[in-house]
Amino acid sequence: MKVLEANFDGLVGPTHHYGGHSFGNVASTGNAGQPANPRAAALQGLAKMKALADLGYRQGVLPPHERPAVEVLRGFGFGGDDAAVLAATVRQAPQLLSAVSSASAMWVANAATVSPSADTADGRVHFSVANLQNKFHRAIEHEQTGRTLRAIFADPARFAHHPALAMHPAFGDEGAANHTRFARAYGDAGIELFVYGQRHWGGGAAPQRYPARQTREASEAIVRRHGLREAGVVYAQQNPAVIDAGVFHNDVIAVGNLDVLFCHESAFVDREALYGELDRKLGGLRLIEVPASAVGVDDAVQSYLFNSQLLDAGDGRMRLVVPDECRQRPAVWTYLQSLQAGGGPIADVRVYDLKQSMRNGGGPACLRLRVVLTGAEIAAVSPGVWMNDALYATLSDWVERHYRDRLSEADLADPQLLCEVRTALDELTQVLGLGAIYPFQRDEGGF
View 1 (spheres, rainbow, N blue to C red):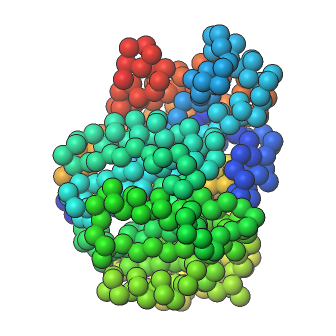
View 2: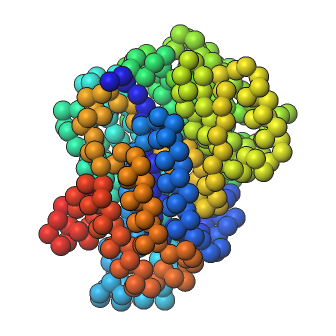
């Protein structure tokens, strides 16, 4: 079996709602307080997973986190049984209840940074769980993310797992949303691009309006952990001006795959030096740089043009998976039509409805974690997570039975919702064959 890149998508959780917690993410804050449809959100995500599996891509599923995170609330001094904890929190700290109920773990591009075995000193696939320390609702995710990844990629001879970096602004780490791997072929030693928003120590350019969530120091630490070759690493700084325009991660302004980089001309500081270094180290970079005259930064942010999946379509061609919002922005859609007709690397554009995720600030690229795997490594992955006709039917039925079709912040204190979530997740771990990975299962004698 050849080496390939698998996509592991996050399954949207039952408490998906619009809490507006992500300052710097325009869609997240702009839709705060609106009612959400968790059932539709999960089904939209599943439809994209199934469509890519049908196109021949290896597609995996990552389960949601348990929410509301009642144990986190207990750590803040709320006591009694679960119902009492929820009731006290909604009275005294309703915004905290919304935060610990966020389904943001669905955006698994932020779950971890992954280096394939072809790049690492010990020949194993390395996972570094992201600390996401910049936002409270995401900073509570890393322990469950680690448990989930260890259950799916369990063979220590093939997979190495690293915990989150220190919870300090110096080591702000947002995972694969700021990491892109380039290679002539997936099995070759690659060039790993680490994009950071600012240096914590040493000064330099930094955004003024919105936070830079990834630091150079965090990226350097991951390079050391993963045992990457100096010749196989490139660092680049994200343009502070686009961060201040709402580009909170690099994957909102750039995406790459194999030898292709698709990005906006405003994405990077000193972009010509970056392109040159990638070209030299890779032995030839195919660059598609979108000019601001064709697509402005605001259009890019509103449409999530670059928060798309760039997939190998064979014979040197690429397939671009974009959200339906790209069709709604005339400048973006006109550009995409010209891109397909222009004879360049991107020959196919596929559009998917991900409105529920998009309204909370996450597009196709946010929903997936990319993992390059050899045949032996694929065989070592927990087999129940691979998308196929049977799993799609099972998960679609599971969502229909367990998810509400309307959820607002006022519903989060309902003890029945927590019971619904735990019942659903307990069943899901059996469907995916992952064992007892959640705290409520562990408390009952499990993991």
